[in-house]
Length: 455
Image (cartoon, rainbow, N blue to C red; front, top):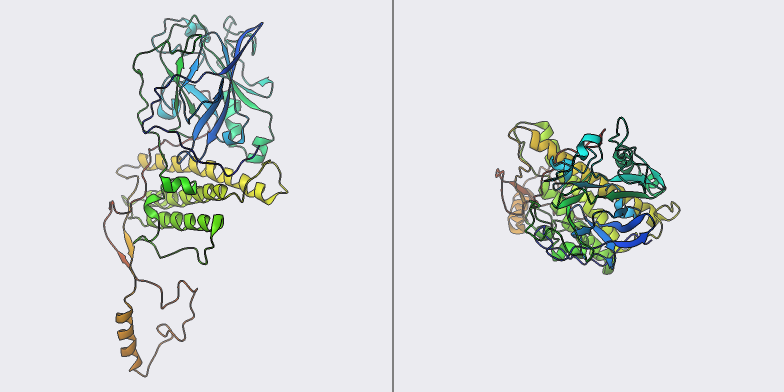
């Protein structure tokens, strides 16, 4: 499977709402009952984090984070084989983003909103069952197709496999793609009378949630009323410029920009490499502007996070732009003899690991009393006034003395773009919250450790 440059077609609505008919899985009837399959992938260019994609009965469901439809009584398989799933273990919850937003997840001991089921008493409530290859990783079962039922056991298990599934998504990418196929099965029984929507989400990255509705055999939603639980944030939509780069948040940092030099990349060619260089100029400007910060609440930890977040964002954007350039196209990420595949695999780790770290840092900032998510001070770079410089030089020329530190003749330039003659002065503004060229804000996620239990 080719994993690299793609045509960026962003089919996102501005709000996290999908009013279209729910996307149906590809289903077959067997002796054991109805079995349905969604193939899961992720468009990493659709937002800062990327969004989930699903393929069902008619192929691609048509957008990122589509609303899915499931029938009660059918077994659903969510296949996470595609390499884009790396660092994105799928979860299911009764509220957006599950435990990452302190919402109840589908678990053996949780019966669901407005349900009259007694399943909580014997840990038989509907929950995802996590597998690797043909091996189910848990002990709980409400689905005999996957594993013998456990509801009648003397001490029914509540282990549905997440403890063994999620940590593997933190493994180095070569280990992850070399493992057997990861998949999640879900059976929502007909005798559970909950009709409320529930949600899929990523167990590692917050703000990637999407909606699931119960449907009838015709694919129509059973709950036709207005969504009873709202996703309380907008889906991000990259700007036209970001779509051309494959990045996020760079639109306001195209050069020229008064907080950045005229260029970061010299001798820029035409073509795809030139476009990549242009995007690098913009992302470096975004990082430079983002890393000019005040010391917030007299905290070294806050300062570290304010500095490190734009640094990480720059690494993520640089990798995304490289993938869009086409030079890192790769048919097999496990091919360690192909330089394009090696750099592509490296970028997958950079994108997914550092995005998770950004969310952790934002969560830490939210936990520091009085600290803000950003505390920008504007450092403006102005062009030199050559007449003034000429006048000052003429005054210096009238003197017989000269110092090694001020002589343009004796001081070697660092580079053609940063010589003493061309280096512009900087003027630091004390503004701590300037909106001019401010870095793009993002929702705040709580720190995301590897959880040690199924929650």
